[in-house]
Length: 242
Image (cartoon, rainbow, N blue to C red):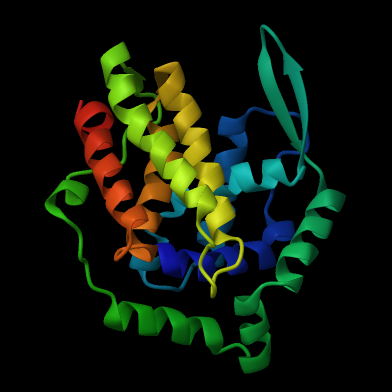
């Protein structure tokens, strides 16, 4: 649902300031459920297929908001990292996001029927066109830890480094400004996890795998798409099929 996720993201930002975030400093796993709850509230009334990925989107939106400094952070080498929602920064981030977003501009021009029409149209034409390998991937448990061996890390890292270099040199997708940069960020974050070799499978799922699936879709007739598909097979072999 990579394309429809862009429309969902606009709805998320429209309702960002309505989400009931904890007022005190809390951990990531206490904030992500608040984001998911707010997102599900935003999408209530729409078909359940539109809402099926909220658990993944909540993780992605947390990282996006964190990168935009919407959360104040406190770190301790023993206790870990804590986050607190900054409403003033969130308001500024929301305004900046919507100001340049073409989907939002379209919705403002068309009116309240726009998003219901979008989702109805999407569900009317959407087809599941996944390879057998991709179809095998299941969302991993959030506490599942993966420990890769040195040879497994090398097998994934080499084509991953090559993909990053190729993607950095690419001109991007003309009708989707900023998408290439966002995907690069996800893929590089996932690469760091693979490099360490010890990580939560779920984090690789919402960063690296999510980015690769989008690349397969957006660059399906390009060497980038083929490279991404190869890496997905490697992740199934070493991470999600382990």
